[in-house]
Length: 371
Image (cartoon, rainbow, N blue to C red; front, side, top):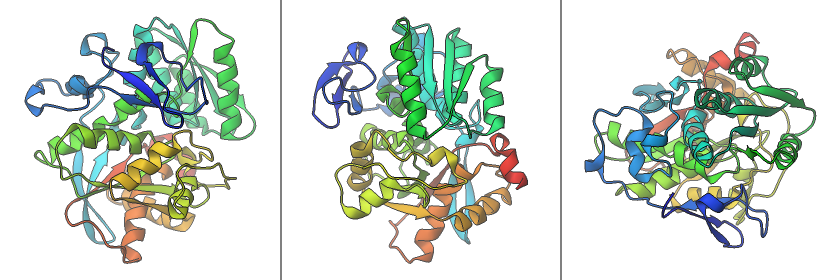
């Protein structure tokens, strides 16, 4: 952890990573992580096929990794509305979602700090990922989830041996319940994918892989689902690790819950909470994302923008992906839907290749596919 610090996105308070709590104790805002962020491509081990090949810019050394073989997911050519794109298949990670990237790094980090029990709040994919890596590392895991979470996702979490507590109410009420439980347990850590900055350092590896898979260059634009923002902020961190030109980052949210889109379009500096409505994209239904300033900074700093996707376009895009052999869940189709919407509206696109990140397996949402 030498050289790694956390900086509060709101008040600027700074601490060493090893001493930091999960959020700023001064103002309660989210941390951003700072540390070694320049990757020397010559340092990459060609025999290492996991995300730990990027050890040089990760806060946990490979020697202390808890790993399930995560990383280097396929990048394949595809088409959306007749236009060629690259599809990054992160739904093929070990537990079926991109969250494995963050979970591998975060669980390894907390384990090396001496924690043996992690408390998690999640609507599904992050819970599965963190439960799996806890199981692999011999840690206990207590998951707090919304009462409306997909039964298939909860079955996966329980299969890894995690304790599950269902909470009635909003996503924010679920998080509050988990935070209280962690605070009451002196040997437990609150391992939130929406709050902990180390999680982001794992998610940044998807774009580092894309850079390698495209022969040592970035695409012109990346379209990706956004809920809590770790995939987006991770991409921003990856941009800093390698020379440009760098991609524009386009954040896609369901119209029913699009606080980042609304804040971006208003020109806000932070993302205020909203009241969400129902959406098939349950993984992105986060009405009060903690890392608002970092998300808006990543979008604007990259020259990107944000798209809100209605349910009809989401379902139609989901079917387009299925018909290309990609059985993904609704949230995973948000980035692809945002690309189609931008084309249909005639939005000027950056010149060059486009990458769509496909984030979660349809095997987690078979009930929705049946509907």
